[in-house]
Image (cartoon, rainbow over the protein chains, first blue to last red):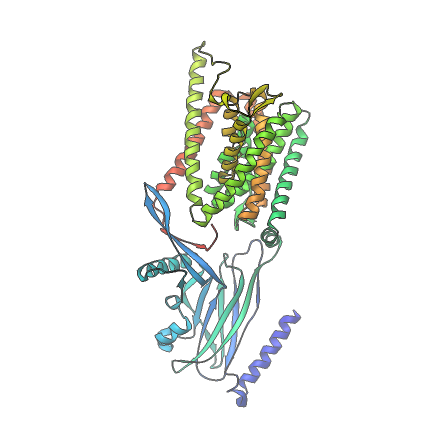
Length: 250
Length: 306
């Protein structure tokens, strides 16, 4: 509670700073999240976080959310002797595990294609590099399949969210996460766009982590695999032994 | 009521899991088999990733076999000497199997190999059981059939390294039980089964062991092979879901008791025919799924995992 209070106070101070006439050039954009930590517990069904901030004058705001980068493999099945078998695999190195975005106005009105490409705004402009040499045709084919699968899983959001301005300087937007959201450190990038160019930007980190018994079990199994395996066996032995007790006399 | 399985990373209804454990428990109570050969495919049907289903079934099997062995041991029906020799092969086989499993995961074929292995094994097993039980039913109606020879001499009796097994009243080459243990160890690692359904007939027909000591001895070695597989899978592949295994065990205990009681009342041949049909149905369903065109031919996985 005190952390949140402190953050609110800091943010207010930041807003005051940004909105103060003399300081405008030093701090054209400030933004923050209502929460910097999303805890995934048992029964987690997705959540949303509010991003809010202020600019020092007119302009548009574009927000992109990127999950932690991971190596992802795309496998293609083909029919071999009446059976569907994975026959080709292409790995994209360090692709974002989650991607969504929001904008205050339609993208084509405020951001030229060159800028969108540079800033990786929109799924079509995500930079996905294949690990190892892959022909351009195959790269395109697997890239499309990758995006389609990620969209279906709810991990890449193709729709552009709305950044709402309250007056001309204060803005806010809601970032939603599905129940299968990957854990790790997210980068929320806020760009202030003026005259079809990026005036300034700010990156706000967001941590999504599993909390509770499930997370501890998973963590333990990861870190002490041998001990976890031995405990799993021991538990099963004890359970099996207990199960045989009531029927000793039958 | 949903429960989140930490390693499988998905929520499943506890009642469904308890029910699955109970169904498998009923079968093992009635037929005296471990039931692993049905548990793993059923887990895959409800959406548990195959790699996790296989590893967690092995974990569940440890507990199920412990209570089984205790019951047989009380009646003096366990040949510890034979069990130890089988185990030598079992450890080697399960180690090799887990290594093979990790290799298949890396090349993205584990799902295929697990499913195909099941189709083949369940198909063969179901057909043999169906033929055998149908014959038994016919024989019952027409009394007086031919009897099997009591002791047959085969090529395996000519192998070196002979050993004496007192409890089983056998004098055979150690290579045979070690080899059998090795084979079952591989099955256990790749399919998450104890291999009782391979081990039991092999012990009776290949090793010529007295029928009474077969289930107890088979279960004894399954405990250790399954424990070995559980630990190796946890270390090598990180796919053992202990929560899943424990829930299945609870269901299994309840089911095994029900099964033992039902089993006493029902007639063996009809039951075996019924089980054979069930096994064949699972095999057919798995085989059909292999040939059905997936909704999306492409799938995304984190690099280096299943």
